[in-house]
Amino acid sequence: MPQIQIPSPLRQYSGKLASVDVPGKTVGEALAGLVSQHPDLKRHLYTDEGKLRTFVNVYVNDEDMRYLQKEATALNEGDTISIVPSIAGGWVMI
Image (cartoon, rainbow, N blue to C red):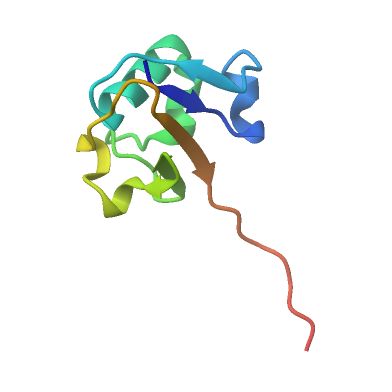
């Protein structure tokens, strides 16, 4: 069963779990299973139209799913899915 790694900022919406085992044959199915188990995560991962938010990066075994088959990326037993929200901000000293 694939395991989804939950980043620290989102753990408050996953019952403080750092990872969740979720069945799924594809990344999309696994993420759907995750938000089914932890509904509060949905608004942080998906838009109102049901699309994965652009600032949410998803990796399958350290490979960016955007360069694979996106949410249709096939999963195997023991795969690790990492959710990595983009971080922006800061300042530049000139």
